[in-house]
Each structure stands twice: as structure tokens, then as C-alpha cells.
Image (cartoon, rainbow over all chains, first blue to last red; front, side, top):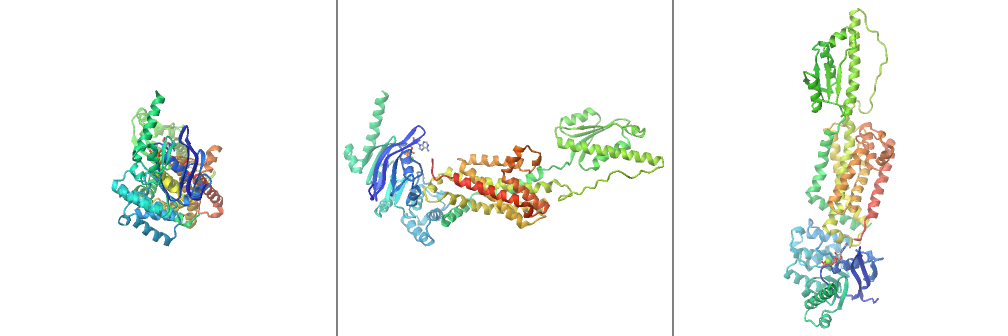
Length: 252
Length: 376
Ligand SMILES: Nc1ncnc2c1ncn2[C@@H]1O[C@H](COP(=O)(O)OP(=O)(O)OP(=O)(O)O)[C@@H](O)[C@H]1O
Ligand SMILES: [Mg+2]
């Protein structure tokens, strides 16, 4: 694999009992790219992400993240990884600052590092006004930025965001994406899933998944060209339609 | 073990405890509540046994017999019934546990030097009461016989020749044979186990249920840092409970600590290690808080039944005794009774202490090994 790739995946498979949630994925993502994983509900996006973060062990295939093998060197990956899980799992009885302090400690920041970095991140994520608020009392947009703040405190090389904008209003989503783009400019590789195709338009690379399989991979422009559509949204709908008609044919 | 990570976890867990009313109630209210409930409920003293009498003789002698029962202090008479049938009915309905029927002509047959028959009805469904009353009644019968002989001799102008065996009991450690003094130390152990297991059983499960576990295990934190880091606040909190239950035991139930208080506190920490470990182990196994609660309560049953808290372990079948050896509480109750009642020190308790420490380390290690930093 090339040194400039942040993620390389070869024939990745994950089975839950009889269900093949991820079915032979292969792709690679260069460092510093914003990479969007798209697909309908249950297509295996979260499962793929969890394997890449060494939270799930693949049934078959292999993958390297930041140069480390996801099975044998999972803990090395975790040191360089920032992760926002689906549904922002924050400690709701803690304040925003307490949540951040906790993760700063978990990632082993020194006292000085912690102080300067917390101030930086609070400013970047526009959280200064709400830093002392109990997270459980905050609305979706604020919670989302607290979760992001916790995930970037330790300056990760790879930021993984599983549906970071679900349940968040359009203004907050726009603010959030401008943050993501700023982070990518600093050289952080971003892996993101979303059901909003307008957001995916911001990505450098897109993977289209359906039923655990990779249906297409490339830049938004490439995909629009291949599927002869003007937007990613139209491409996405075309892919799902194609599968539906295929399914109908089979059942007929 | 990374100290910064450990402290981060400990601090966060402290905040959770302090902001959660349920946890605070478990820490401060539950031990006192349990001590009061069990302290009064678990008593093997035979007191206030409801007793009924049918006295068909109405003689000074028959009244003396009833008085002899009253004088033991264990029986409270609920008055006289007119017929044996009424007495039996009272027993059927559970109003009395002991019935005494003194037939007509009781005094007369005494003075005729005959065996005077008296019927004693016992509720055998409560064997402790029945057995004790049986023994008591035999002694009373013997004493009444002696009294009669004495009166008879006196009438003949002779006096009783002293002789026979004079048994002089010396009851060690608990001279009044007060069952509270025996029960309270054990109860303190049971209460501490219950509170600490319940508290820690939720420690990891809560994070699993709320989804924060996934966020936690995607960091470089180690299993042992999570387990130990979460344990530390509970050690602090549980030591409050040690103090609280000792205070209730000593000042409310008036069970003094004969031995060394500092040794007792030191060995309590050894026990806390094991008890908190049990909770943590439950936390690694259970998937939901409900499951954790059920498992925590499941550890309470054997603790009460098999540890020697209520029932003497010597009387149990060997297999059941062995299960008792696997419970940390068994050793801790030995230690509590040893220090509080007998006033012994390490010379008598080193075996219990070593086994307790070994069990604690084993349980904690198992929970660390069982903890998976993966979701599958
Ligand atoms: N731990 C698990 N055990 C069993 N089945 C699972 C497990 N996790 C996921 N699945 C199944 O695997 C399939 C893929 O799930 P996954 O969560 O990866 O989809 P997704 O693309 O993230 O969907 P969504 O857009 O709804 O988040 C689904 O059918 C899901 O029910
Ligand atoms: Mg998902």
C-alpha cells in the first residue's frame, strides 16, 4: 500500500450469524481526503466504520488504517483516531467542559496541553458560551459540536463521523460542515456517513453502498458523470431504484 | 497503567455518583435502612411467644405452674380459654403458638403424690419455638416436682439433703447470649456487600446502555484502567458505608467492638475489594441495568444463607459448605465476629484475611480479563 493512503480495504466481510452486513468491500482513501460513505439504512455503513475503528473484528478480508492492521494493531489505530458514534454518545450528566476534560485525560494530554487545547477547541467549535452547561440540557446542534470537540482534542490523524448531522437543523449542519472542511485543510482525513446528499457533495471521494456491497466509488463529479445525473441525490435514487427493479424481476 | 487516564475515569465516575440521586440514596439511605430492618427482623431469641391457658383447676398450684412459665420471660399469656376446643382453635388461627391445659384435680393429685397430668400443646410448624418450649416445660415440670417434694418433706419435719451435680456455665464473648450481639456484626457484612455490589454492578452496564461505552473503547484506554479507575470512587463511597454501619451497630444496637477498630477498618477494605470486584464482574456480564440488578440480588441469597450469617455452616452438607468457601462474605463475617465479639487480632484472622484477599484479586482479575475492547 502507498504511504499516502489513510485507509486501504481489501475484500472486507462482516457476518452477524447468517446476515452478511458487509460483503467484500475494497477501496482506498488518500490522506487528507474527505471521504463519504453513502447508502440506505442497513446497507452496512456503521458496520464498516466499526471494523475500521477496530471495534468489530472482520469475518474475512483485511484493512489498514493509518498504516496499521485493523485486527492486529487495533490499539495503535485508536491512539490516532477521533470518533463520533451514531447518536453522539456523550455523558449527559456532565457539562461540556467535563466531557472534554474526560477525553483529554483519556488521550493522555498533559496539564498544559489540556489547557491550551481545550481553549482552542472550544473556540473552534463555537462552544465557549455553553462550556459550563450540562450536556443533557443542550439541543442537538450543541451536542453535536460537543461530541466533535471531544473527538478532536488529541489532534487525531483520522476523524470518523457516523451520521454526525442526524437530527440537527440546517443552520447547525452548515456550521458543522464548515468546521469539517477546516479540519480537512489541516490535513486530517475525514470518514463520514450521511443521509443528506447535499452534504456528501462536499466530499472528495464517495463510496455508494447497497446491501453490504460497494456499488460505486469516486469523486462526486465522477459518479454524476457515470450515472448521467446532475446531483449525488439523483445518483443515490437511481442506485436504489436499480436494485428495486432488480429485486422485482427476481421475485417475478 | 496510565495515571492520567486512570484519574480521568475516577473523576468522571465521582461526578456521576454525586449527580445521581439513586446512587446517593443507595450509598446513604440503603445501609441504614437494611440495618434497621434486618437488625430487628433477624433474631433467634425466643421472646413474647403467644401462649394460651385452659385452667380447669383454679388452684394456687395451677396458678403457680402458669407463673413458672411467665417467669422465664419468653411467654406472654393472651389470657385464659374456657375449653380445650377454644385453645385448639386459637392455635389453628395462629393466635397462639403454645397452649397449656391444666385439668381439674391437678392440685389434688399433686398432694396425693400422684403424677399430675398437664397437657402442653405446641405449634410444631415453628420448630425453634416448639423445641425451646419443650425443653423449658421439662425443666419447669422438674422444678414443680422438686417444690412439691420440698413441701412434703417440710410437712414431715425433715429438710432436703443437698447433693447432685451443680453445672456452672461460663458463656464466653456474649454472656447474655443476646442474639443481636451475634447477628449485628454479620449483618454489617451483608449490608456492605449488598450496597457495594449493587453500586458497582451498574458502573459499566450504564455506559453500555447509554451508548457511551462504544465511544470509550474506541480510545486507547486499557481494560484495567477502566475497571480500576471506576472502582476507586466506590472504594471511597463504600468506606463511608463501613463507618455508617459501624456507628449504627455500636451506638444504636449497642454491640461494642471488643477488638481493634483500626484492624476492623483495614480488613473491611480487603473485603470491599472483593465485593466491589463482584459488582464489576456482574457489570462485564450483564447487558442491561435490569439484568445487573437481578444478578446483584442473586449474590445476596447465598450471602445470607451460606455464609454462616444466620445458619451455622457446620450443620450444612459438605458441598454447600464448599460453596460458602467461595463467598468473600463468609470470611468477612468470621473477621467481623472475631474482632467485634471475641476481640481477637491477626493471629486468629490471618487465614480468613489471606483467603479474602486472594478471592478479591481473583474476582477483579477475571473482570479485567473478561472486559473486551471490542463490540463482538
Ligand atoms: N451487532 C449486530 N448484530 C447483528 N446484526 C447487526 C449488528 N449490527 C448491525 N447489524 C445488522 O447489519 C446490517 C447493517 O447495519 P449497519 O448498522 O452497518 O447499517 P447502516 O448502513 O449503518 O444503517 P443506518 O443508515 O441505519 O445507520 C443491518 O441489517 C443491521 O441490522
Ligand atoms: Mg449506521
